[in-house]
Image (cartoon, rainbow, N blue to C red):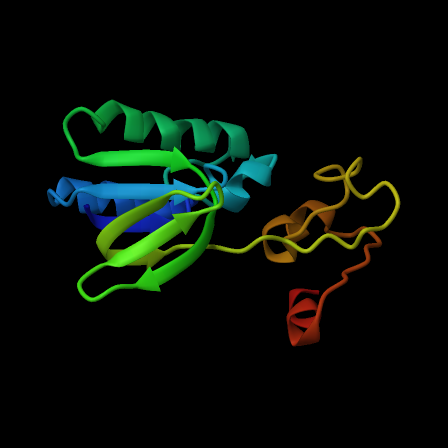
Length: 160
C-alpha cells in the first residue's frame, strides 16, 4: 500500500513525486511516458533554470533526479498506463492497462495534456520542423512569416 500514487510523469507529476517522497510518503508515479509533452519538444526555452534545453535532455534530467534518490526516498517510477481508478472504503485502487492494481491512501492526477494531431498528410514528418502544437511556446520562432494556426474556440485566435 502506497501513501500516494501520482498518475502522470510530466513536470507536474515528477515534481509532486519528488516532494511527496522527500516528506517521507511512500510514493508511486504511474505514467505512460516520462516527461509528458516536454518529451515531444525539440527545444524548450521556457523551463525555469534552463535558457534552452531539448525535450529529450529535460526528460533525461527528470529520470536522473528520481534515480539519484530512489534508494534514499520511497519513490518508485513505473511506465504503465492507467485504465481505471476505484474508491474503496479507506483507499484507492488504481488499475493499470495490463490488469494489475496498485493501492494508495491518496491519488494525484497530473495528466497534463496531449496535442490532438490534425491527421493531415506529412504532419508527423514536419513535427518540430514547421508543425508545432504550442503557438504560445513556438510563435516567436515564426515571427514575420506566413503561418496557419488551427485550433478550437477562442484559444487559437488568442494565440495568433
